[in-house]
Amino acid sequence: MRDHGAMPRYGIDAPTLLWLVDQDRPPAPDVQLVAPKSVLVDGLELLLDAVRAGRRDRDDALHAHTRMTETRIRLLGDRVSRRRAWDLALEHGWPGVRTAEYVAVALLQADALVAGDADLRTAATGLVPLAQPTDLVTG
Image (cartoon, rainbow, N blue to C red; front, side):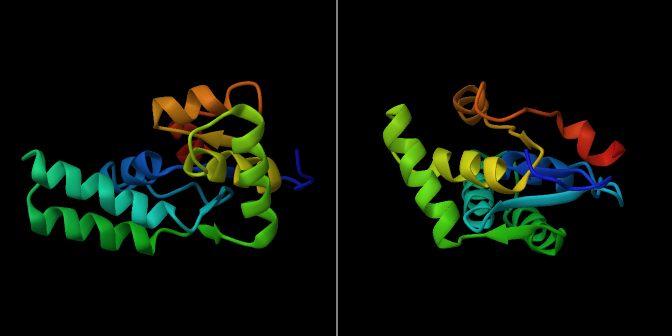
């Protein structure tokens, strides 16, 4: 857990970012968000899947992606977080580093992880404190 004073910092995944956008609920003023740089590509993939499945139209999806890019998030992709992700993936036998990236960023830079992805939430359990999406908007 990092030393942060009074301002909580949350690691978030792409489903959580999309939830914030879709609910039109910006983070509370006293909340800081962090995520791996890949969160925006992961979000775009979720939107593409939704368009292909007929759950969203193209214009709505592209507007949501624009709003995702406008959300105030500290995006990380430094050597330290990538190395930690690599180590986590090896240590826990995860099939790749994608899940590990989110866990690593949360471990290194956040007080808790908000994971809308069930597999990520399961992988992170016991490694990093978990929080709910509503914690982001209530502070």
